[in-house]
Amino acid sequence: MALKPTKQRIIDAAITLYNAQGVSNTTLKHIAESVGMSIGNLAYHYPNHDYIIEEVYRQLEVERGQVFQDMLQAPTFENINVELNTLMTLAQKYLFIQLDGPYILRNYPLLAELQRQFYENSMNFVKIAIDMGVELGNIVQEQVPKQYQRLSHTIWMLVTFWCVQHNLREQKELDVEEVRQCIWGLLYPHLTPKGLHLFNKISEANKLS
Image (tube, rainbow, N blue to C red; front, side, top):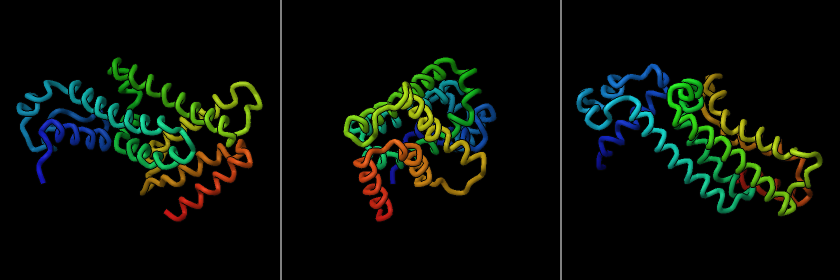
Protein backbone atom coordinates (compact mmCIF):
# COMPACT_ATOMS: atom_id res chain seq x y z
CA MET A 1 0.00 0.00 0.00
CA ALA A 2 1.36 3.42 -0.98
CA LEU A 3 2.42 5.76 1.80
CA LYS A 4 0.40 8.92 2.40
CA PRO A 5 1.99 12.20 1.25
CA THR A 6 4.25 13.71 3.90
CA LYS A 7 1.95 16.67 4.57
CA GLN A 8 -1.00 14.36 5.20
CA ARG A 9 1.06 12.20 7.57
CA ILE A 10 1.94 15.37 9.51
CA ILE A 11 -1.71 16.42 9.69
CA ASP A 12 -2.84 12.94 10.77
CA ALA A 13 -0.19 12.87 13.50
CA ALA A 14 -1.22 16.33 14.70
CA ILE A 15 -4.88 15.32 14.96
CA THR A 16 -3.97 12.25 17.00
CA LEU A 17 -1.78 14.30 19.35
CA TYR A 18 -4.34 17.10 19.71
CA ASN A 19 -6.96 14.57 20.73
CA ALA A 20 -4.63 12.79 23.14
CA GLN A 21 -2.94 15.70 24.91
CA GLY A 22 -4.54 18.93 23.71
CA VAL A 23 -3.50 21.64 21.27
CA SER A 24 -1.65 23.76 23.83
CA ASN A 25 0.41 20.76 25.00
CA THR A 26 1.45 19.68 21.51
CA THR A 27 4.69 21.02 20.06
CA LEU A 28 6.36 20.76 16.68
CA LYS A 29 8.82 18.36 18.31
CA HIS A 30 5.98 16.06 19.36
CA ILE A 31 4.53 16.04 15.86
CA ALA A 32 7.91 15.55 14.20
CA GLU A 33 8.73 12.61 16.48
CA SER A 34 5.33 11.04 15.81
CA VAL A 35 5.88 11.21 12.05
CA GLY A 36 9.51 10.12 12.35
CA MET A 37 11.24 13.20 10.98
CA SER A 38 13.36 16.08 12.18
CA ILE A 39 11.83 19.41 13.22
CA GLY A 40 13.75 21.00 10.34
CA ASN A 41 12.14 18.65 7.85
CA LEU A 42 8.69 19.29 9.33
CA ALA A 43 9.28 23.06 9.20
CA TYR A 44 9.98 22.73 5.47
CA HIS A 45 6.33 21.72 5.04
CA TYR A 46 4.82 23.82 7.86
CA PRO A 47 6.93 26.77 9.15
CA ASN A 48 5.21 26.86 12.54
CA HIS A 49 2.46 25.31 14.61
CA ASP A 50 -0.18 27.82 13.47
CA TYR A 51 0.11 26.55 9.91
CA ILE A 52 -0.51 22.98 11.07
CA ILE A 53 -3.59 23.63 13.15
CA GLU A 54 -5.06 25.84 10.43
CA GLU A 55 -4.49 23.07 7.87
CA VAL A 56 -6.10 20.55 10.22
CA TYR A 57 -9.08 22.83 10.54
CA ARG A 58 -9.34 23.29 6.76
CA GLN A 59 -9.39 19.53 6.36
CA LEU A 60 -12.17 19.29 8.94
CA GLU A 61 -14.14 21.97 7.08
CA VAL A 62 -13.95 19.96 3.85
CA GLU A 63 -14.98 16.69 5.51
CA ARG A 64 -17.92 17.99 7.50
CA GLY A 65 -18.98 20.21 4.60
CA GLN A 66 -19.42 17.07 2.52
CA VAL A 67 -21.53 15.44 5.25
CA PHE A 68 -23.88 18.41 5.47
CA GLN A 69 -24.05 18.71 1.69
CA ASP A 70 -25.20 15.09 1.52
CA MET A 71 -27.83 15.70 4.19
CA LEU A 72 -29.03 18.98 2.69
CA GLN A 73 -29.80 17.25 -0.58
CA ALA A 74 -32.60 15.48 1.28
CA PRO A 75 -33.00 16.65 4.92
CA THR A 76 -35.51 13.90 5.71
CA PHE A 77 -35.66 11.75 8.84
CA GLU A 78 -34.45 8.73 6.91
CA ASN A 79 -31.41 10.44 5.37
CA ILE A 80 -30.33 12.19 8.57
CA ASN A 81 -30.77 8.95 10.49
CA VAL A 82 -28.25 7.28 8.17
CA GLU A 83 -25.79 10.19 7.96
CA LEU A 84 -25.67 10.52 11.76
CA ASN A 85 -23.13 7.68 11.86
CA THR A 86 -20.77 9.64 9.61
CA LEU A 87 -21.34 12.87 11.54
CA MET A 88 -20.55 11.28 14.91
CA THR A 89 -17.48 9.51 13.52
CA LEU A 90 -16.24 12.89 12.29
CA ALA A 91 -16.92 14.51 15.68
CA GLN A 92 -14.91 11.77 17.37
CA LYS A 93 -12.04 12.10 14.87
CA TYR A 94 -11.73 15.84 15.59
CA LEU A 95 -12.67 15.67 19.25
CA PHE A 96 -10.07 18.29 20.21
CA ILE A 97 -12.09 20.99 18.41
CA GLN A 98 -14.68 20.83 21.20
CA LEU A 99 -12.40 19.84 24.08
CA ASP A 100 -10.01 22.72 23.33
CA GLY A 101 -12.72 25.09 22.10
CA PRO A 102 -11.99 27.99 24.51
CA TYR A 103 -8.24 27.81 23.83
CA ILE A 104 -8.74 27.75 20.05
CA LEU A 105 -11.28 30.59 20.13
CA ARG A 106 -8.90 32.78 22.16
CA ASN A 107 -5.74 32.07 20.20
CA TYR A 108 -6.92 31.59 16.62
CA PRO A 109 -9.41 34.37 15.76
CA LEU A 110 -9.86 33.26 12.14
CA LEU A 111 -10.62 29.68 13.17
CA ALA A 112 -12.89 30.97 15.92
CA GLU A 113 -15.01 32.84 13.38
CA LEU A 114 -15.21 29.79 11.13
CA GLN A 115 -16.24 27.65 14.08
CA ARG A 116 -18.95 30.09 15.16
CA GLN A 117 -20.29 30.18 11.61
CA PHE A 118 -20.33 26.39 11.53
CA TYR A 119 -22.32 26.33 14.77
CA GLU A 120 -24.89 28.73 13.33
CA ASN A 121 -25.12 26.79 10.08
CA SER A 122 -25.55 23.52 11.99
CA MET A 123 -28.42 24.90 14.08
CA ASN A 124 -30.03 26.28 10.93
CA PHE A 125 -29.72 22.88 9.30
CA VAL A 126 -31.56 21.20 12.18
CA LYS A 127 -34.30 23.81 11.90
CA ILE A 128 -34.55 23.15 8.14
CA ALA A 129 -34.95 19.44 8.83
CA ILE A 130 -37.69 20.09 11.41
CA ASP A 131 -39.47 22.51 9.06
CA MET A 132 -39.40 19.86 6.35
CA GLY A 133 -40.85 17.39 8.84
CA VAL A 134 -43.72 19.81 9.43
CA GLU A 135 -44.18 20.34 5.70
CA LEU A 136 -44.27 16.58 5.05
CA GLY A 137 -46.81 16.08 7.83
CA ASN A 138 -44.44 14.14 10.12
CA ILE A 139 -44.22 16.86 12.80
CA VAL A 140 -47.10 18.89 14.21
CA GLN A 141 -47.28 22.63 13.68
CA GLU A 142 -45.49 24.81 16.21
CA GLN A 143 -47.60 25.30 19.33
CA VAL A 144 -45.75 28.34 20.68
CA PRO A 145 -43.50 30.91 18.96
CA LYS A 146 -39.86 29.80 18.46
CA GLN A 147 -40.65 26.33 19.83
CA TYR A 148 -38.79 24.57 17.05
CA GLN A 149 -35.98 27.11 17.04
CA ARG A 150 -35.31 26.12 20.65
CA LEU A 151 -35.70 22.44 19.84
CA SER A 152 -33.18 22.84 17.00
CA HIS A 153 -30.75 24.46 19.43
CA THR A 154 -31.16 21.59 21.91
CA ILE A 155 -30.63 18.89 19.27
CA TRP A 156 -27.59 20.74 17.94
CA MET A 157 -26.06 20.86 21.42
CA LEU A 158 -26.74 17.17 21.93
CA VAL A 159 -25.01 16.13 18.71
CA THR A 160 -22.16 18.66 18.93
CA PHE A 161 -21.12 17.97 22.51
CA TRP A 162 -22.04 14.30 22.84
CA CYS A 163 -18.48 13.14 22.13
CA VAL A 164 -17.11 15.59 24.71
CA GLN A 165 -19.22 14.25 27.57
CA HIS A 166 -18.50 10.72 26.35
CA ASN A 167 -14.77 11.43 26.58
CA LEU A 168 -14.94 13.21 29.94
CA ARG A 169 -16.90 10.33 31.43
CA GLU A 170 -14.28 7.92 30.05
CA GLN A 171 -16.84 5.78 28.27
CA LYS A 172 -15.19 2.96 26.36
CA GLU A 173 -17.09 3.00 23.07
CA LEU A 174 -19.12 5.66 21.31
CA ASP A 175 -22.73 4.49 21.09
CA VAL A 176 -24.22 6.23 18.05
CA GLU A 177 -27.50 4.41 18.56
CA GLU A 178 -27.87 6.10 21.95
CA VAL A 179 -27.33 9.49 20.29
CA ARG A 180 -29.97 8.59 17.72
CA GLN A 181 -32.45 7.55 20.40
CA CYS A 182 -31.86 10.76 22.36
CA ILE A 183 -32.66 12.80 19.24
CA TRP A 184 -35.78 10.78 18.57
CA GLY A 185 -36.75 11.18 22.21
CA LEU A 186 -36.72 14.96 21.77
CA LEU A 187 -38.72 14.75 18.53
CA TYR A 188 -41.18 12.04 19.63
CA PRO A 189 -43.69 14.31 21.47
CA HIS A 190 -43.99 16.44 18.32
CA LEU A 191 -44.65 13.63 15.84
CA THR A 192 -47.94 13.28 14.01
CA PRO A 193 -49.51 9.81 13.47
CA LYS A 194 -47.72 9.77 10.11
CA GLY A 195 -44.47 10.71 11.82
CA LEU A 196 -44.94 7.98 14.43
CA HIS A 197 -45.40 5.44 11.67
CA LEU A 198 -42.16 6.62 10.05
CA PHE A 199 -40.40 6.52 13.42
CA ASN A 200 -41.46 2.90 13.96
CA LYS A 201 -40.35 2.02 10.44
CA ILE A 202 -36.90 3.57 10.95
CA SER A 203 -36.54 1.99 14.41
CA GLU A 204 -37.28 -1.44 12.94
CA ALA A 205 -34.75 -0.88 10.16
CA ASN A 206 -32.12 0.05 12.75
CA LYS A 207 -32.73 -3.20 14.60
CA LEU A 208 -32.27 -5.19 11.43
CA SER A 209 -29.12 -3.40 10.29
